[in-house]
Every structure is written in structure tokens, then in C-alpha cells.
Length: 248
Length: 223
Ligand SMILES: Nc1ncnc2c1ncn2[C@@H]1O[C@H](COP(=O)(O)OP(=O)(O)O)[C@@H](O)[C@H]1O
Ligand SMILES: [Mg+2]
Image (cartoon, rainbow over the protein chains, first blue to last red):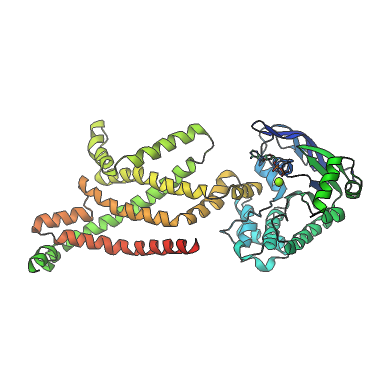
């Protein structure tokens, strides 16, 4: 879709847990402003792939480059890399002892050593982007799941990442709350954020994804534009997977 | 009845012993103000060390905690005060007490903090690390505050034990409350100073006991 150098460049990535090989040589490139959707059966290694990209999991072999920098290289400052990569989890993982603004500004203040006022200004901007500026003083347990997930997105956005990774961001939400999170993600996409999204929200994938990647048993089996993948899949496994999802 | 009052609640004796009791009380208070923070800080350090990934760093911490939880604090204090001088280490009484309490109570506080840290889901750690906070920052700003909040009742309960245990300092002649009461008793041939010391302990610790039971009730109500 564009030929600028990839922001995320994963090559021959392998990851084993003990004897279990979970990623069996994954190649994935994500270019600036691209929204890549990852689908696949449970246990196929989608979460592990995302978690390797900021080294929450340590890859067994292969290379990962973020904005051209080899993040596996010895001496690389992984904390610096992680600020460039926003991550959003299925279970939100907000800090329950801090209020919303505290959640969003913690890394700005403690990792980037920004003065409080500056951090809070950036935090309020991020909260405004997800439509929750009015909840800055609330605590996570006072928010709905959808609001919590938007705060988690704001927490990542406040660090001004160049790429955002989403691991099933709406799977833990009641159906009526899914839309508010997807709306925020759509806005992010429109403003040019590069995104990798693991999700089974097929309608969102059809309307927002540039590319869909199907993972199966630790490998990328097929990838392409959403219409192609959903309407005319090459592999029987993918066809089977899509019909199992769409039945729900 | 009169005999009991004469020997146990004699106001005249109490008046005579009051200056001793007052200075003993101040010493006990000072002891608590030193050994409790020392034990809490030591315990936090022990708990953080036990979260280390390296087996070689963790193992000595486990050994330390196990040893000092099994070692009777009175024996420990007597050893430090009367045994170590044979090795050329002759600490003043207050320092001997502080050291014994540090070794003993940090292992208890350590176990409490460790339980608290282990009660925090791993996802909290991962969320913090994914925003670029390093391991120490994550512990300081995300894990330890939550862990501490989860174990406040246990911390209060242990602090109560520590406060009561400070009376063992009397065996090394540190003039704390119990020592002062014994002195008063010896001078007056009357048990009133001992009773008074007991009442002072109860009066000072009772608010903590109330606080603790409020926490415990709240926890039962939540379950
Ligand atoms: N920390 C871990 N230790 C051991 N096995 C793991 C660990 N994390 C994931 N796995 C295993 O790796 C496989 C892939 O998991 P995951 O990446 O979570 O898949 P997905 O997100 O596609 O459902 C699963 O079989 C899972 O049990
Ligand atoms: Mg997963």
C-alpha cells in the first residue's frame, strides 16, 4: 500500500516455551499508517507474537526491528523502545490504586521525568482523544469496561507511540460497550496511527483494516486485503475459521 | 479487697513510681519508633529481594527469613547483647535491641510484603513495563503501593506484636517500660508499678486493636 520502510519488521521469529514451539518462523511487516488485523484460532500464537514485539516475551530466535532499530540487539534500551510501542491488553490492566489521570501520566512522570503539570497536560489531551477528559479524577473501578479500555488506550497514547499493538481489546467487553472502543480505534486510524490489532471483530476488520493476517499453529498461513481474505480464502483452515467466527 | 488494692492498685505507690514509669514509657515509645520503621524497611527489602529472578540471590534471602522466623527473639537478643562481646562486638544496649529486632521483625514483615506482592496479578507488572517503566519504577509505583494496601491488616497485626515484644529489651537493662516497672516494684515492694505498666500497654495498643478489628470485619463483609 505504501513503500516507506516498515515501522515494524519481524523476520523469522521463533518462540518456544520449554518444548512447546509457539511461533514457528513468523515474518510480518507493518508500514507507516497501516492497520494490520491478526486473526486466528485460540492458541495459534497471536498474543505471543504481539508480546515479542516489545519483548514482554523474549523471542527464541529471529529479528524484530522497530523504526529500523534491532530491538534484540545487545545494549538496546528496551524501556525506550517500549515507549515507542503502545500496548493495549484484553483485560485493560489499569492501575487500580491510581485515578484515571494518574494512570495516564505515570510513565510520563516516572519514566520520562516530566514535571507534573506538563505530564498532566499531555494526559488530559490523551484523555480528550478517547472522550474521557471528564473522568480524569475517577478511579478505574468506577468506570465501565469500555471506559477502562479507552483509558488504557489513552495511557499508551500519552507516550506518543509510533505504533500501537492491541491484543483482543474488545473481547472482555459487554457487546454494547464494544462500539465505543472501536470508535476510538477508528479515530486513531484516521489520524494516521500505525496499528496491529488482534481481534475477532470481523465487521471492524472489513471496514478498517488494510490487511488481514491469518495465524494458525504458530505460522502466518495467509494474508491479504480483508475482502479477499474473508470472501475468497485460499486455505481450508481459514475458510473453516471464518465460518466458525461468523456463526457467533 | 483492701489487701488487693494495697498490693496491686496502690495510688501512693503509683505516685512514687510515676517518674520511672514515665521515663520507661518514653523509652518504649522511642524503641517502637526505631524498630518498627527499621523492621518495615528491612521487610520490604527482604520481600523485594525474594522477587528477584536469580536463584543465587533469592536463596540466601529465603534462608535468612526461615532462620530468623524460627530463632526465638529473646535468645537472639541475649546472644547479641551477651554473646557477641566475646567476639569483640560490644554493642550498647539500645543498638543490640535494634539489631535483634531488625533481624527478627524484618523476616516477619518480609513475609507479609511478599504475600502482598504475590497477590498482585502479573498483568499489572506487564502493563507498567509496556509503558517503558523499568523494573524498579514498576515495583515502586505500581506493585508495592497495591501490595501494601492489600496487607495493611497483617502489617498492623505484626506491628502490635512488635510493640509488645519490645518489653524483652528489659533483659539487657534497657530502661523501657517493663524494666522501669520492675525497678519501681523492687523499690516499693509492691506490684502496683507492674499493673500500671500493663495498663499503659493496653491503653496505647488498644486503638490499634480496634483499627485491626475494623479491617477484619470489613474483609469478612466483602467475602
Ligand atoms: N508463558 C507461557 N508459558 C507457556 N506456554 C505459553 C505461555 N504463553 C502462551 N503459551 C502457549 O502458547 C500458545 C500460544 O498462546 P497465545 O500466544 O496466547 O495464543 P493466542 O493469543 O493466539 O490465543 C498456547 O498454546 C499457550 O498455551
Ligand atoms: Mg491471545
